[in-house]
Length: 114
Length: 115
Image (tube, rainbow over all chains, first blue to last red; front, side):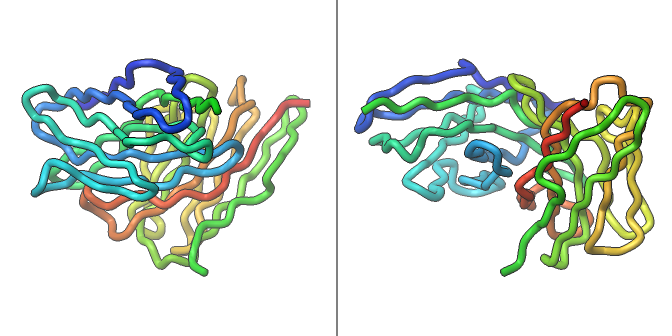
């Protein structure tokens, strides 16, 4: 069975500051990994995904994440926060072989102050 | 534009009543999913379907039912057996009927409340 842990239910940053949202996974084999963003009363939008290949993955809106197998982590970063980045972010994992559903973390709410 | 349409956006249920949430997609995706979202709980999988006329229970299927008679439609019924139905419900779809590397595309959700 696989699981996802997102450290911190809320993260606060100032506009222009570095954004770091943490995600650690538990899986018997290296999984596929995803980050999604959710704005209030909306569905989830894919930010980026890691399947195979390069471990540093670039996504939309200036976000990127690095897969670190040794640390079982897939932290999301953005060099400079914008007010429009305020939203809830979800890390998710799926198994790399066969059919697999997504397992989501509990989410991290990003708050951006002026 | 292709996408997933969920309706209604807000829904109210009386005690002992069944209600059905609609989910339609025009992405030509084979797989469809229903999630329940509660504050601080993330998304939990209710049911999923890899192909027409077939579906499987997810982690929290009790009190819910689904059907998949058409590729583009995957309605969810919240039955009176679901004792705590107040939540935000999200429908999603993905390409193909297998392969965990395919991202899921989400609708904008239905918020269900008890009167």
